Image (tube, rainbow, N blue to C red; front, side, top):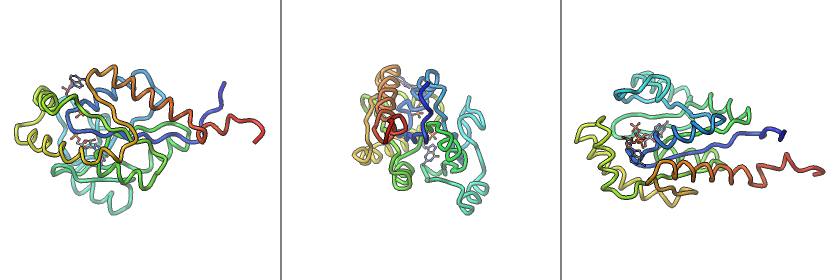
Length: 202
Ligand code: ADP
Ligand code: 5GP
């Protein structure tokens, strides 16, 4: 058996709201149970079907601000009137154990992660078109028109950050997008620096 990795890979996935990040992640995790999905903290209200501790840890603004003050976040950001943040403790533990950790975070948070963890791999997911993005946001039936408009506007701003990402994936078909992400992760795992523990005699 191959020895376990010395340290887990940090994987950052970003893309406009409604592009299908949660859907693609669910497909990816159904085949790769060895990846740990980091459950973020947010002050946003749960959507229908979302579960506390599964999709997010849903907390009050006071709780979130207390966590900021105590330095408990690897990164956090404000996104369309709500806070979102990644707890440092759990992901540190997982990576120490050699487990890969996946973050679904927006562009400001991704930039902070890259700064603090330069080895993180950054993947941006886009829809085939803005028209399709709008269709998906409407089709999800979770947000009202004003929220959807805000998210579409935000998407155009987020696109300016695409050059800072290592990889770009188009979510046209979920299985293809998930397959591309799998391929990226396989290639990352094969980097020389991630495999030196397999080399004898050095
Ligand atoms: P995000 O997590 O990026 O906000 P979701 O995963 O919630 O997006 O997906 C938004 C909507 O688009 C959902 O209704 C989902 O079923 C749908 N969707 C996701 N991927 C695709 C795809 N490749 N083709 C068509 N619809 C999709
Ligand atoms: P949503 O409200 O649609 O679930 O998420 C809105 C945005 O917040 C998405 O772009 C999502 O990637 C991002 N997001 C979710 N969790 C975090 C987090 O912990 N940190 C940051 N910076 N963004 C997050």
